[in-house]
Length: 319
Image (cartoon, rainbow, N blue to C red):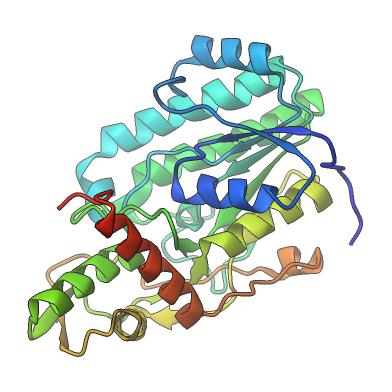
């Protein structure tokens, strides 16, 4: 692989290191000869531009990975539109703008595959961005993420800044959010099925019809892709990050049941929204850089469930 940026000896700020994605990126960077910089939410509110600028000036990172965001599943996006739009816009403008002012050499902004049009061609090529209406259940988050990657493009065009963006598909794994209402599909199903198994419940209800097709990527694979982009990519186009494989929600639910050892019946609640009917990203460009996902769905879910059980035992997951 052609290297366009040398990470060796660099100071790398992972913004959002306590989140699932940021935590995985920190784990991955432990394999590189870099100094990882972090700041907790108590130390630094990423929505406050002046505070972010001051932190950047004091700590002088060479590289910034912006993994911080307000995230959630369909229910959270649908019920908290102002929070999802405002908080994410503020984080992006503070960190990306502040990084440019501080002279950061390289910045990676993480978007999301939900920024594509609801009825985008499948697999979704990067060129599909802004070619049609968004999925209504997450348009607020999507608009904020589109603004972030466009801000990176703008700094690149106007100032020549080496700011790049990646767009991960549906992620899962250690550090996920297991909120009973506001979590994404993998975490929601892991929690629901574990609770059902322990309660000997005869059935578990899965939101929606089970027919939508989704792509799921283990978060440590996504982190590895992020390091690949930092080292080997410098371009205006935001590149897709995904496994290149898809399953229906119904089939995915059966994979989760197997990981959790839940043997009851799976029922589907069609009154809950399905979201987009299909969402698979085209990862041709990322694979062209020499990267591909390594963790199978069953292996990843087993690791995710082990993390859930450990955090539950430690009291880190609220009822």
